[in-house]
Image (cartoon, rainbow, N blue to C red; front, side, top):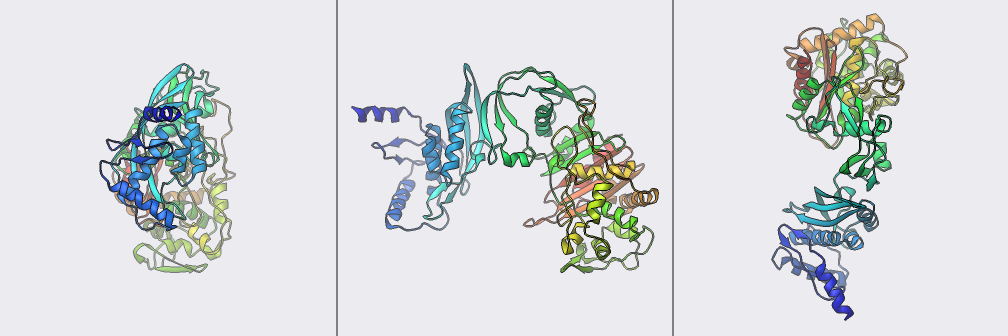
Length: 557
């Protein structure tokens, strides 16, 4: 009698749907065989697995299609059936998988789960999730897509699902969890500078910005919390300054209102520019105030424009030039060395295509972005000179910006020997975001560092960061002339063609290990606009990020 009841319970469990074919669990208690894609290949493969285990053999070599399918099916069927332990056992990290899958049902209240796998690509299996999220007497449908990858388990080589939180939901990182309940933080209605509502429907790039605004201003903006399914960030995500994220609203809260500095026409133009390119990010500022006028990314998962931490390449030469001019190591119209090679600290540095400028000026070296012209001055500098210049003049690398949403504030660490030399050209340990490099151009244009901000400090009384000093009038005049000359005749000239008025620019290309093409950077100003952008793994900045930034400077008319 007991056996018949157990068998009946198993029959009531809905099987996972893989690639349109039902995976049916059959057999006696504690035993299971799977019908895979209507062929016998997987069953035969499963027999070989059992034999290999009995013989103590270690399975090696590429995964077969049947192995990938069987491993994916074991995991998805168990998960769909609500058997978190069994699903976790089908992964290469059962403990972590069990914790998150259990919380998926208990803390997030996700039930009636249906998982449907798509066509396999190698060891990767995409799948869709349809379920219901329930909190007390409220329930709403949930649907999203995810994917898993099958690997061989260390030790015996058995196929297992490679565990990572993103398998459960693509927005999850290590340490994050899904929770359904009262949000705790009321929603906000974010407005542009003209009073129009900012939504991801109109401006797809602003998802993380809106999340950040809600986290900081939700409680003080006058709204009331609702009930929602959200990602609660763990320590790793907090280090990356990621905000909690709402995935599904079960009952609406009453939003408060937060006005931002974003310009609707510039934001729309920025969205259009990044949509034309893969892995592109851009920021537009107003130098006279520090107001952020536009923020856009072609990738939606991470706000590279404000939080990216990337080597800025030769755009860093704007800061380095200000240092060399102040120290009397360079002057725009004086001759300056630009050899093919220069060795420092055990590294041999060279210029792009190994060019050299014989008898040229520092202006010519800046305009052509000669690496050796800068690294050749490394022996004359102290290890902390560049760090101090970035902090004291440009307000960077002090982690004290109060923008209104999470940002990365640049990093220029003190380095020695070859890494110090590399830092002078934006490599080594130097890291920046497009926001940081837009701020560099804004500082040159305004003559003083004004911390960028997205929400006026008058809203909450926060104190904006300042820089301890400004450049001398003579140094500032030279720096502006260097950028202006580069925009007209140097590596930025093609992109800046047609950008009239008081304008300056600098290109950059940053090499990244394991990446065939460098990240292309471009920073520029025109009138009371400053902008910077990066297109990752795309090539030289003048031809990749340059047209994007120049188009936004033009659209500010």
